Structure formats: structure tokens, C-alpha cells
Length: 464
Image (cartoon, rainbow, N blue to C red; front, side, top):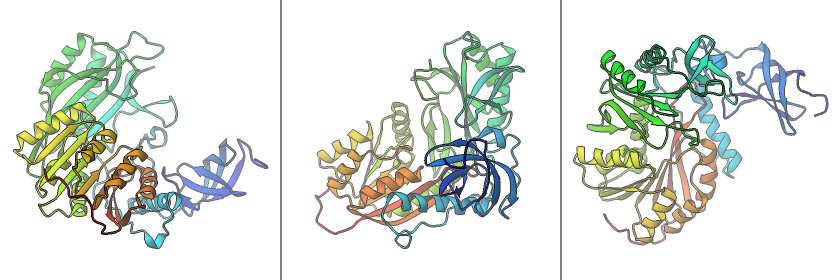
């Protein structure tokens, strides 16, 4: 790029906030991303990466600071990368998350801003200590075995002794477990210590029942894990379940394919909306229990059930959404590919004496079209896909059966917008409600309501 190279120092006015929380400015029409910069600030920056269409720069000096800039509370903030917006006042973070959705819709759809009803982001009063689960890697360091995180986009390990967005109970359990690993001379598995077995520590704590589960993710089993499990259960009464999972690094997920219990109970429980919800170590559960209540409330508000509807809950997880919907619907079908989640969902259904739900263990991409082929066409479809969003083939199947109402729960504004652009062929966007499930990060959760554009006659649904 003419007049610009890696190492160049430039002055930038920050024109907008990017989808990853970074500031964005322009140098001779080249887009420059600056981590830690805020809208309307002026920065002296140094270019650290240069590409044909954009550059990445770091802050050298803040020439004009935003009134929304605050001092991050976390001592690891500049190195860890787990949070991206602690340096921004929380009220501004909520506005940014609303803006990120607007940006995604502007980029991937033809809607103009006046056609888009993106509501104000619903935030939290206490924006710290909200995460009920930690998945943290272990590494051998110069000062011994350590627990931490990897800096984004690198193999640089950052030792983190406490995380201020994790529940204090999680931080305490992590410290106790690390201490026992050290006591029993267990090592992390890395290139310099192939004899080590430790990969990750997974800790989940549920405040509603004051219970926790701990899972050791390892390359191989070691008898010392049994001893550590026994000592953990004796040391901290909050810990009710200890297990291990073998992952020999062929699995890109943190957990391996199976979980083996070492002591305590096989599940811990969440009290939620009058129900007892059992959660296995390898099953998905919302990471923010406090905001979870708002998320489900917004889903119900969008669904507007009257008791006569047939509902399909796609990507149903451990069944909380399906069981809540069942209280106001005629029948609910829940679909999820995870055998652990479906097992928990069925157990939770029986435990809470809810009969009008059918859970199906299947990939949604195949399981939902199979329901359609059987003539089971829902009045309301709830989708809560992973970050990759809905596959195009699944969207085509949805469009073909003309479901009256679609509620799309998203954790990725970009894939939401891309999916909406296809769904707009038959659906009208009513509104998007952002919900801040992860304060101080760039993650944006939202609930979108779509309704069928016309009143053409649709096939009579099978009532379950």
C-alpha cells in the first residue's frame, strides 16, 4: 500500500466500532482496525499488519480520548483477550451491540435503517461475575503448572489466577483444583512435556442450587485423578460432581467424546421457572444464568403462544426452551444432535412431569425436514443455531412449508443477517431484541421475530 508499511505511524480518527469491539478508522480510504480504540477518538497508531484491503494497528498514543473511556478493572485485560470492551463505559457497550446488529443488516441485506426495528440492548445491573462456567487450558510454565487463557489469534499463554467475569465460586474451585494438580505432580500436555496429561479444566457453578461440577480434560487417564476427585469433593461441599474426559486432540472441541465420572453425582441442577433442570458436564447450558431468564422471557414474548399451537424448538439443548414453551403450547418437538443434551432433556421432562413434548436426537439440518415430510408443520418455529447460523438447505426447507411465525435466537449478528436475507423471501422482520449475555465482550445475543408476509393458505399442521 503506497505510503504505508508495517511499522508506519499514522494519526487516525475512529469513525465506528467494529463487530469485534475494535475501533475502525480510514487512511487514504484503507480500513484500519485498532484494538482498544473507541468511536470519535483520535489515535496515533502503529501499523502491525498490512493487507490489500485493510490494515491492523496498535495504539501508540491517545490524542483525543472518548468521554466513554474507562479504566478496565481486570489486571489481565490487555493480554488475555477474553473481554474486548472493558475499556468502554457499559451504557456505551449496550449501544455498540445494538449498532453491531444494524451494521450486519446493512452489510448483508437490502433493508434500509428505517425498515429495521432493532430495540435497545437489554443489559445487566452487575456486569461482573456472571459466567457460570469456565473452560480454561493448563500449561507448564517457568513457575509451575498454571491455568489461564490463550491470547486471541496466538499460541501465547496468559496465566489468569482469577477472572472477574466468572462467578467467584468458579474462580475458587479453579484455584483449589490447580493446587491439587500441583500437589500430585500432574503436568500439562504440551510439546516440551509429552508425558503430561492435562489439557483443560471445565468448571460449572449454578447459583440457584449452590452446586458445581468439575471435569478434567486429559489425554489419558491417570489413577491420581481419582485421588484428586476425592479430595476436591471433601474439600469443597459446593462441588457435587467430578469427572474426566479424554481428548487426544483429534477432537476440535474442548471435551472428548465421552465423560467418565470419578465421584459425586452425574448431574448438577438448576432451579428455573419452577422446574428442576439436570445438567450433565458435557451438555450445553446458558453461561449467564441471570440473563437467561430475560432471554427466555423474550422468546416467549415473541412466540405469543395461546395454548393451541404446535411448536418446534430446533437446537433444543437440554430442553429448557421446549419445557417452558410446553406450558403455553399444545405440543412441542425439540431437536438436537447432542446425545448428552437430549438425554438430559428427556430426564428433565420426566422429572418435571411435562407430557406434551417430544425430543428427537438428530441433526436439525436433517431432523427438521423429516418432520415436515411427515406433515408436522409447526405454527411457531424456534431456532437457536450455533455461530455458523442456519444452513441454506435448511432455510429452503423452512421457506417451502411457510411456517406462520419464526423466532430466531442468534449469537452472531453476521450469520443472522445472512440468514435473514434469505428468509426475507417469505418473511417480514417484525423486530430484533438484543440481549447482553456477555458484558464487556463483543458477543451479541438477540431474539428476532419473523412473520409470514402473506396469508396464503398453508397445509393443515399435524397436532401432536
